[in-house]
Image 1 (cartoon, rainbow, N blue to C red):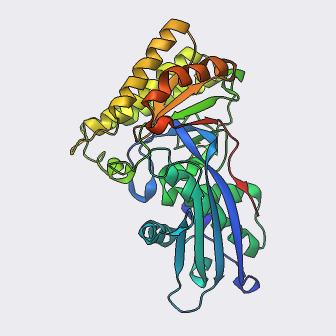
Image 2 (tube, rainbow, N blue to C red; image 1 turned 180 degrees about the vertical axis):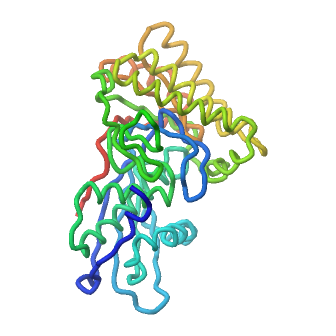
Image 3 (cartoon, helix red, strand yellow; image 1 turned 90 degrees about the vertical axis):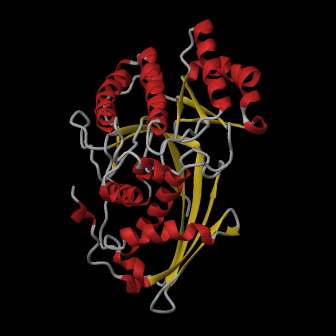
Length: 360
């Protein structure tokens, strides 16, 4: 599909005066990372992620025929009006209006909340923008003469990408690929696709315990971080590495090789942060307790030969990934050894989920 396939036509807005939609949309955690993008939110390399379950955004989009020529929208986050969120949403609406021209006929009120700390490196923009994109698509579906599910979800992912790149991976589940890769069927730079290849039972019901080292906002936004890849001295080698790792992890997911999975996932996490530390200007998002947790994980894995591993997003928090059959041992390890390094002893027990849900 091309961008032109997502331009709306033959929509009858006269039948729809007002209404609202609510979507519950999960965050995701990338196994092979996306870091660096071209124009129009096109990724420099393919990425693959687990869709999460307990970490989600709940967004209601209320709409009514606009009262004046200009139109308006308001944003409420966790019950409070948030005008500081308006510029990002305004940019999103501007980017998608060519694909959803009906948006210019309505005023909007956006009400949203997270099940996890905002802007702390748990991909809140991914779940937030995907939820908003799904609400927009629900309106389009209502005024469209015909729309099949496949188109609905592909366009939702396409729109979400224009708000936040990784948001396109939060529409479906449980494993999603974003980026055109020669070995991944139907993969695209324009939207995320469900990983359709065979997945070993070792990776079913996989767990993600998120250790909240720092619940505050990141010092450097992901948008700024991506921009620093433009002139990065190691960028091209990194993009090549990521494409090769997609090929490797595809075979790992099929074979069920948990040791190889650990090697890829941890290497990807550390590579992501090494790119931040070697950019100009350089920055470090890990905290001292991030490193303490990583070393504890390595020690524990060596002692027990269990298959827990870590990954990181663009923040200080640590995602602890492990299979279902190791849940009890890892939970005990987290309580006894790791929560001391978490802010206020906070952590989130999550697992791989199935994607977004319409609630009304």
